[in-house]
Length: 623
Image (cartoon, rainbow, N blue to C red):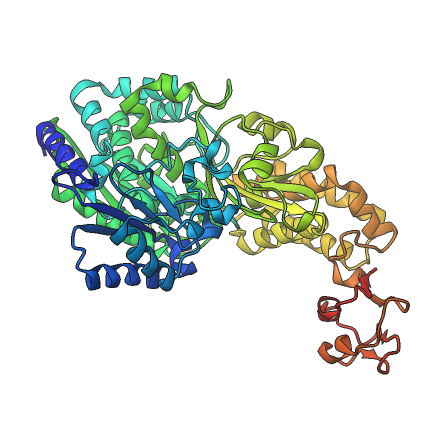
């Protein structure tokens, strides 16, 4: 493909996407068809839309699948574009609602207000249509990495090109030298979005400076943190952005071959990547002599088998080589000796997704966002005890309070915010006292947490922080590759101490031993995963020491989570003797006669909580 052909394709593709254009559809409808949408029931919604349009003979209406739109708890989501009207977002759809939208909105121009996002969130007056961008969830977002997710058909090269796709690659190959590309990234301040936040331009320059007969570009799409789904969503919704960015990296560093290492558990992402690579090769956007520049670049996909350690860059490269995924000692660093012992540049999906926009629009636009040392935006997978779960992209420096109370809609059921976990098993927790912390790399590190890949799990007063630390450590114990003894043995010993604490068998000396062991593992583990494995324990001990001590000194779990320290008690004065609790108890631990206060036999009770859930009078409490 030549530059002129690219520009001509862009003009034609834009027209086809524009409702009301002579070459475009009368109306364009997109259905959120990422993993979240499909799981929520998007397939029958899509089928209903197409069936009803066919039955009405409405042939000039385009219905397409798209990626994650963002507000995952409102899936299935349908968005409708019509000429002269703002985009309409319909949420929590089903086949019947979809049919009504076709008959009312598409066929007769009458919006179905009660299905729209404003009605669902309670942010719009009755009958008012609130655009998605004006909801609290979106007001403070700025989409760069996610700019095309939920907007285009991810399997359409033409639609990606309509959104300025491959213009950055064309600009680099026809106007810039490799060093210019690297300098733009340095000036932008882009830092790696996969963990430690190393400056991207600097990393690329290290590989560029090393001479070799072959160099490689690697995309780390092995997203293994519990609660993280940012990279998956980008690959499902905008795979060409990563393909283009990797080609840009190859040009800047002197690499002619790249590998995308993606989890086999992401079948939609894999399918869309395969399609994008095939389309790019067919059009000459990958392969030989791209844009007649003399630059060659090719891409391959490698599937990961779900090993968390393969998220570490050297273990990932070892796995691509067909060996057991174990980390390598550094130095030498991958820029010197990486994949197949050749100079290699590795970044994660989100990092690459930012690159085309930075090259196309220049460093100042990106650098204008964020904080002094953390430029641009960051994508978070917002989950846990929060009203609005989903995918958010915010400028660096946005406070945790803004994320939770405004974007996230606060804690449901009137509960009180307790902490937020960032960085997954490698991160730490942010307590309520630090809720006004601006989120960036350095601020999170300073308070004992880390950015990580972008999982943000919100916890309320009903969460036990000792149990949370145990949950994350249990994950890393299972996922340790076993190569180094500090991680293999040390995390197991930490887990044994946490078990003692949550079971009421620990002594105060165990807390000191736990902390000492954690620091030893951090200082002596071989790779970054082992070095950060103790972080959830250290962070919770720092901010919630009293909770640990209550488990040990008082044999009590303040949150009422740890079963071994928990007892269910019936309050005699509140019990009406309705027998409901006795009827649902699976082990017959509750006794009593009708209209008389019942009793729970502690020796029989398995602490399942069924009785408390069933009681309509608040007569059962945890102690």
